[in-house]
Amino acid sequence: MKGLSIPTDKHVLVGMGTADDAGVYQVSPDLALIQTVDFFTPIVDDPYDFGRIAAANALSDVYAMGGVPKTAMNLVAFPLGKMDPKVLRDILAGGLHVLEKSGTVLLGGHSIEDDELKYGLSVTGFVHPDKILANQGLRPGDDLILTKPLGTGIMNTAVKAGLASSEQIRDITELMAALNREAAAVMTGFPVTACTDVTGFGLLGHLAEMIAGTRVGVTVFSDKVPLISGVLEFAGMGMVPGGAFRNRKFRENMVSTASRVSPVLRDILFDPQTSGGLLMGCPQDHSQALLDALYRQGVADAAVIGRVTDTGPGMMAIEY
Image (cartoon, rainbow, N blue to C red; front, top):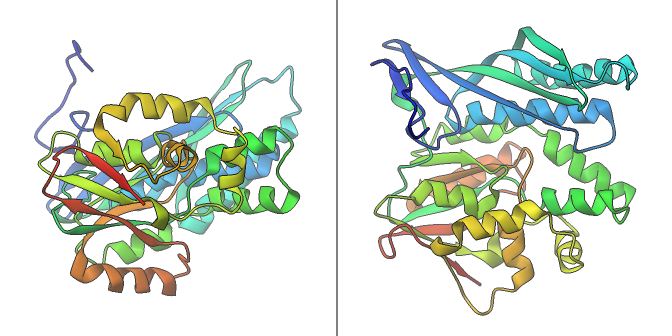
């Protein structure tokens, strides 16, 4: 942060100088630690599902860096005098379910009493120092691959408005609770040049971080971006969260949009995601093999959604 002196040393491989998903600290020639933390207020009504989603979201940063999560610690803020303690138990149970599924052990945590419920995790993962994936490193000619469909912010807004069906609520919940574990495992077997996970800044916001200050630009094929079923209709009805407009305003100087791209679709590209998919760059001659491998591992929505170019450095061209 500007004006602050940040402690560091020679073993910090990825620190606060970049907008990466997590920090990385080397402990030996063959081992580095990935460290991240994330927590938020409930985005679904069911406490168990909230716990699952929050845990999957926190683990995702380790996967995006090319690592494997190993340990975690709970972060809890809970209104003891206003809410049944069973709610907290169910949240923690949901988080534990996802930790167990990911092979991550819980070492402890910290809780405080607060007027507003919050839950999340601090996570530590392992990665070889030579195999770290940062969010910058894209090369001209790379294909951009996204592993989950977009639209969780818009869908959750529709849920709050009482417009989503029970089937849509179930589908969006399972999507947000799904780990990026399989996608990350596949990714490490290919010459991926850069990776991030798509969360609060939306697809274009996180893509902007991948090219900001670099010598490359990107073209996004908006008609190829996978979307959650129903999200176009809800976005057209105005169910777009305020975060999407803030994301667009912040990055609008980096975006050129073709006239054929509808304003509704543009809003979806900026929609803030919760526990979104991985966004990675892969040389074009390897991208189909990478997609095929993702499909074999059950990552059914993975798609090539754009290409890295050597024109328009630091710019995102949205085509249809």
